[in-house]
Amino acid sequence: MPPEKSKTKLRVRYSETDQMGTFYNSRALEWFEVGRTDWLRKAGIPYAEMETRGALLPLVEAHVEYHGRARYDDELEIVTNAHMAGKARMRFEIAIAHITGERVASGYTVHAIVNGEGKPIRPPAWLVDAME
Image: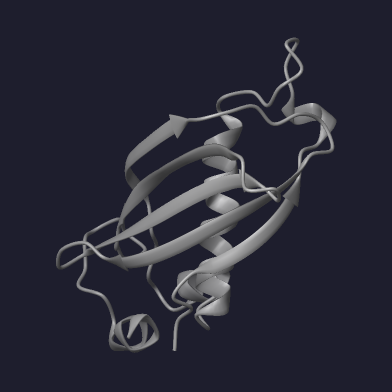
């Protein structure tokens, strides 16, 4: 059974900060990926295994809202949830906050489900089973 929500801890690395001392804005999407892959792993379908089984999840839409700062060595928690978004898409809802609860960023990503040739496919039975 997939996790209702996956919680993942992450520390801000020095290379992820900018001259203003906070995380660089594009890092939020990279942290979304951390949450997404952890959610899939906890659901029993690690992304590497999905690829070998012929299902890939290219990004087709992303939305990020920035709420606050995160500085070098801050400990963050990424909370991720996922659900089907149509017949051949998955949507991941993500919230990133300091462990104190202070929000950093939130948003979502939508991923098509495609085969190795990049053609959209309906989710395979094993993926549907993992999602339910």
